[in-house]
Length: 292
Ligand code: GUN
Image (cartoon, rainbow, N blue to C red; front, side, top):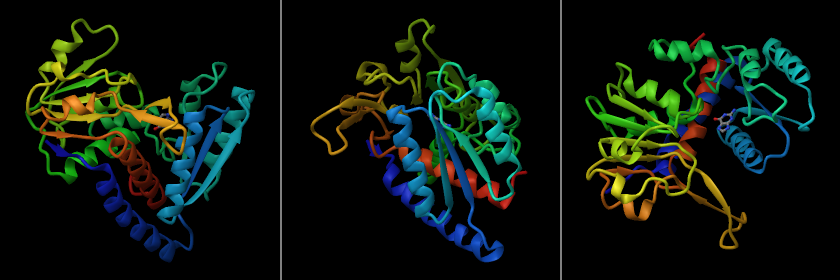
């Protein structure tokens, strides 16, 4: 078993981003600028946004966190997005999900200018991604592709099984792995809560992407020997063992699955760190206007 080391790969790629941000500053007199909008007080979302902001600073980007109470109206939020769309000093806009129930995430996603949609959630980016055209790719799948690329893992011809069909990870991941691209060129099975015999599906996988949000859902009896195992799970449990007061668990039972796998990502220290890299790369591209 070999480790797909998110710590190592993210540090290397971030170093390159930092150099490109410095070059951007030297030529334009300003830094790439990401604005993150956070609504309400979801603990995990607050942690993720704080980490995104901290990483922006680390690579020399400007970052702004706009934090609204959970009671903000959908119209007020959209008015703010329109303002950010029109602001030439803003390169990338993300609205952290999930949103409170009274706000329709589809309306919010479509309100963001697709040219500033560094989350890659806008239908224009989604459609262009499916067609293999230049676009913003959602950060987590993008980070996973960068990881596979870094280790030179050619997925062509593999049977990929994606577990979970979320708009953020599973669904775009299945599109990306099926594309005529590298990494890509897989035969893809997208499994979800209504899949019959999910264990049998996963057992057929040469590459598994676990993005279901259930601690240790993928057990050793589900993994074929030699498979590549990508764990997207960040399941938080309260713990007195760690400084943060939380312990993170993947969707994969790492201890028992790792001996079977050819390559595997740890949690923490795997995909989570690569997600940040995907977002930073998209923000840099947005600033450089290299896609749109
Ligand atoms: N919630 C969980 N992951 C993400 C993400 O990548 N972007 C946004 N905006 N919200 C999320």
